[in-house]
Length: 259
Ligand SMILES: [Zn+2]
Image 1 (cartoon, rainbow, N blue to C red):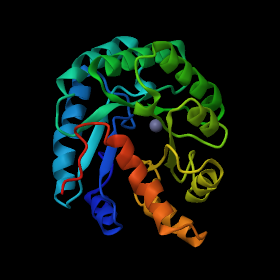
Image 2 (cartoon, rainbow, N blue to C red):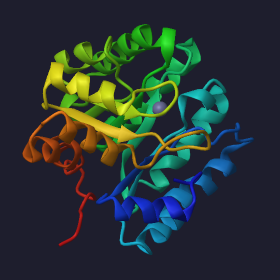
Image 3 (tube, helix red, strand yellow):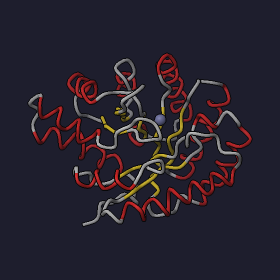
């Protein structure tokens, strides 16, 4: 949402969205130092919740240095060192989106450091998986790294940007599978519903990617429409687009939708 306009918050409220959960991500440019991340974490934990609250929309976030910038391991270690200062803020859900981008050795090392940070602080974890040809191998490397550490229960980790060829291995290993809706490079509403029809409801979470490129903050309501069009029941739709994410995030004591 840091890259979106206030109109998007308004549109989401009109479409029935109940909360926004924003991962720390690549901002469209590489930040030059740790202080850039400190400012960004203040934006995510202070300014954005206030902006969203103007429209009655609860705003939560995840904190990390994203895989794309973690190739600079010196900077990444500096950023990981300041994250604990922010973990007690009232809208922080956990560590994310960590993961891999090009499956490099440095990215993997920083992924392991983030897993350690989450384990030591009892945090939920949100994981980004690489795109296109790197996705299958990257997802397997991520599952191996989580298993090797072993301190975080799979039910407290969501592996995001799952596609048809990776969702099975994520669910089989006991993790939550995120399906990310995006006009380019990720999944359309129709493909997401196809995957639900194959894999069912258990531990699947839909989310919309929003950034500085072509992206659609209303992709969750649009997926609900696609399910309705295919004849799925209201109870099923509610389970997939609302109850499932609430169930996952309620593992954090800081997640609440109020009265
Ligand atoms: Zn991502």
